[in-house]
Length: 409
Image 1 (tube, rainbow, N blue to C red):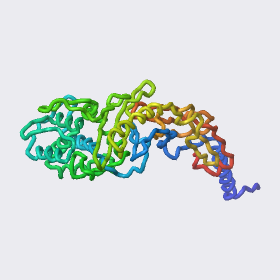
Image 2 (cartoon, rainbow, N blue to C red):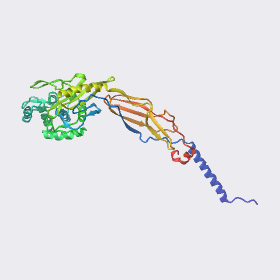
Image 3 (tube, one colour):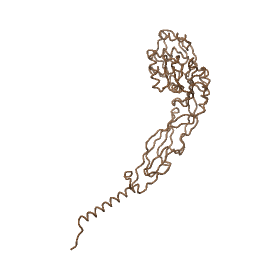
Image 4 (cartoon, helix red, strand yellow):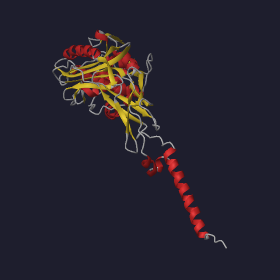
């Protein structure tokens, strides 16, 4: 009589065989299945790239700054502590009035009747030897004519009258304007008790003036007015612009200022040729001995700024921009596939966006992984170059695969 193995023994054999099959399947899967792609720590990131600072002919007094419309301050010189602005404050008045009563180029806007209070502004400024535009009670000027009379012959009385008309009173205007300049990012600017800048309590810095100049030149109505050498004021006649360098070296504005407390102040704008395109550069000079000094010293700054635009390599071919960390200990660096080149003003900071995709395993060096893009807002263009892997991915060991199934299965 033959004996048979106990049933529990057979069960043990089958169970062992099943477990061995599962182990073999697990090992096979770990060794043969592709590894999940590696993710960048962030799909996009912003890089700040600084160009070498240029050597500009700064005035040896006060404080100064230069910039580009749409880009802001590029370089500054001096303490950048708030100083009286004199009539440059009228740009804040113009922006404030146009915010409440906007005009399109070619529009005159509502007619404004000169009141007794407005006439008193004129009389008071004449007594204080401030710059004025003659007016009489009951006279009517359009909003656009008032803006011209305020910005070109720099009528202090016109600034106060225009602000009072728009905001009800000078005190209401001052309250609005002090909040408004902070909203505009002019954190070092304070509007005093008038709209003209005649009082020394209206203060700013050269850096803030560059920001103000950018805002003014982005307003088509203001930019159109400040480019005029003369204006015709009703009942007065032709009045000249105090900006006597207007038109020289492609200078297109913006605003002069002059007072005993402020000295000479000039916020300028000029067209610079960059490659085949045009860029509006800005200069700000505060605390000059006289207005003539501020105007005279603006010219070499403008000339130097145009010469300081150069093709700049923002990112070099092969420059490391980031890396992928392989879970088994390897590192795959990524970089630009070629030079990222742009026309820039020396000292300018450029923001570049880095967009990176997932990295598949395996990948060889030179695999496309994303792009890096820099934007030059003043030239209204973006430039991009591909980003590639600078290294090939490595292979994990067999035992790493077996011990890290969650990275695979």
